[in-house]
Amino acid sequence: MELPSLDKQCSEKDCNQLDFLPLECKCGKIFCSHHFHAHVESCEKSRILSEDELKKIENVSVCSYGGCKERIIVPILCERCKKSYCVKHRHLQECKEKDPETIAAEKEKYAAPMRQFNEAKASIDKELDNKITEAKNKGKNKNMANKVQLMRLKNKAIGLKSIPTTDRIYFNVIHPEPENEKTTAVFVSKQWTLGRAIDAIAQELKLQNNNNITNEKKLRLFKKDGNDIVSSSMSTGLTALLENNVIIDGEDLIITYVDNDCVKFM
Image (cartoon, one colour):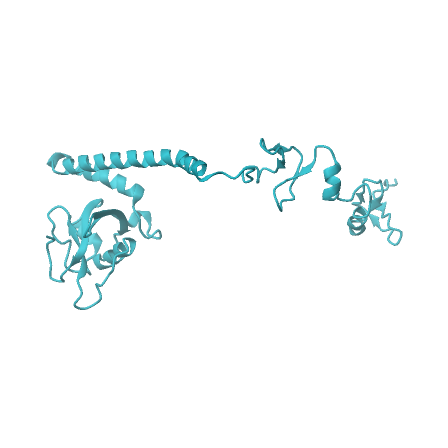
């Protein structure tokens, strides 16, 4: 039994190759893959139309934005100039230059909601801080207040991202400054020593660290509750301090410059 012809001959006169996967041009001619692309570039029925030719075709236009050659099948017309733009440049082209007052009004329109949100958030955060402080002063509510503070710190704390989540310990670090007091939520690794933690906190808070320079004041951590130094030994591990309840996860700590023999923040 004879098999039907499955191949076609390339129409290129110098080729005539038999091809089992022939390509057919819009003009009806058959070509091999090697000669097909060369043919369509010159074929009147298949060649790609130029921009000038596209502009002549009804319902096809080119974006009016300077330098853009995007072809538009469904025109997006500007309400002012009635010119057509592509999606990318629809809102970037201004037909009329805005005066400074209009620009300022538009900026305020979008800035006002964000400013109001930030003001409301700051007010709520301050109220929560006050309630947590009040609860800490009451013995029976102290543990719950510490847990609430820890949850809040986890949402906004900064620190070295490479520290595994299971190794992180959080502190609400207070840095007294000459003009105002700055408070920052920070996390460090509980696998570190106290000295390594102070170095990391200083880096996050962008504080000058002279702990390795003789005769310079040192950065030390103090407990806010009682103002006692966390430890005078920089080699003490944070894990040991946690196990001995010297510090707790989520606690308020003060970082400041003191003399090397200082054990209580005044």
